Amino acid sequence: MFDALQERLQSALSEVRRHGTLSEQDIDVTMREIRLALLEADVNFKVVKRFTSDVKQRCIGAEVLGRLNPAQQVMKIVADQLTELMGGGEGEAASLRFASSPPTVILLAGLQGSGKTTAAAKLAKHLSERRRSSVALAACDVQRPAAVEQLIKVGAQVGATVYHRSPPSPKDDPVDIAGWALERAATDGKDVLIVDTSGRLHIDEQLMAELVAIRDRVKPEDLLLVLDAMTGQDAVAVAERFAEAVAFDGVIITKLDGDARGGAALSVRAITGRPIMFASTGEKLDQFEVFHPDRMAQRILGMGDVMSLIETAEREFDDRQAAALQRKLRRNEFGLDDFLDQLKTVRRMGPLSSLLGMIPGLGGAQLRNLKLDERELDRLEAIILSMTPEERRRPELINGSRRLRIARGSGTSVQQVSRLVKQFDQKRKVMRQVGRGKMPDLAAIMRQTR
Image 1 (cartoon, rainbow, N blue to C red):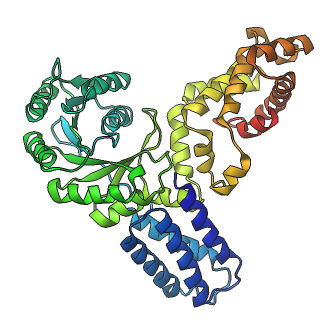
Image 2 (cartoon, helix red, strand yellow; image 1 turned 135 degrees about the vertical axis):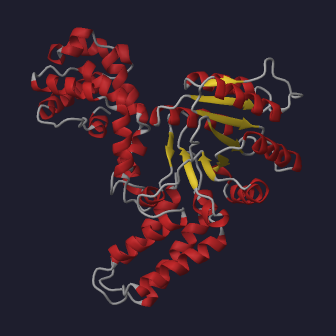
Image 3 (tube, rainbow, N blue to C red; image 1 turned 30 degrees about the vertical axis):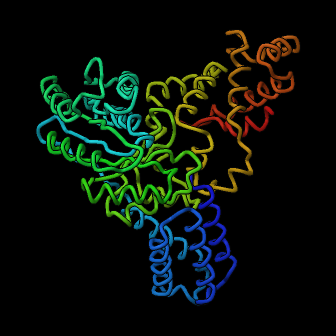
């Protein structure tokens, strides 16, 4: 996500750090590099022009010229402008409106292939976990083959009730289905109803008329547009058309984990005036997060995102589990089974590269230099699972013949097994002194076990 943009912007700002003082010519050179980086990221050219002009004026207005050590000031100005460009100040994030009398209705719109149905399930999971809401989904996409079946499947995975016609037919009226689902949600005492609507391969009058009719029928608190980040400037054009036709309230941006250059995320707020509310950062149903403009700006500039890392960890780590782990560490009872549990917990938090990318100073090139390979985690799991329960509890029992058996069972080498056992023994000694919630240095273990 934003890898190319991140590298280009950090390269441009690194030049600033080499100067003890800055001249206006130095700032012009930096702005030119930033402008090229944004254009290559597929950011709207009008947005780029306004952004670089504002950054330059703020640099000059802040009296950066001629001052010693101006790099931090320039970095802060760029970060502030990126945050403002994406829709907010520090700590600000656009939020949903909730009805005083449930159910709250959220209407999703978007083109076919934007990830709308999956986004509906992800949003349902997010609301049920963060707000402890009882969520239902309305299957109003009657045009796309298997859309209803897909919603039923992902709805079951997140524990949401799915209201749908059975059997579904393209002749079904989505407006009637939406109205019926709203009545059912109210009767069933649901807190939230998320309405999944039909998409099209392109914007057409029929699509817009249908959306307007559903909106008028269910009167949603929020109408959210689902945009595919992979489509770049096309996503911004789609957002403009939807804004004109149905006046949506916010955006869910999907596929930010792919090869998206980031232009949609950086342009849509400036072009439409509507905020990005949520971002889908992976294929799994829990890879979905509130979009914080300031945190995203920090990630782009390689400044890390400690708050998101903390929030992610808090969701996955249970206080009782942490207390039990602490007791085991104090009693020197921490074994490879416990390590495997911790490893699985970390993997549930997301790709290791994404987690490390939230740590300040570990963005872009630094992460690539680490050469992290998720397959190393698979090898670690395979090695541990090839051990007997007693060996996992007491790794000191693992002698030469046992290591050969474990290596054969896990498809690895004896050397890799030996390195894991040795590294684990070292880490176990360190972890006796580790505070609550701290984790083993998985990246170091991965390097050692190759």
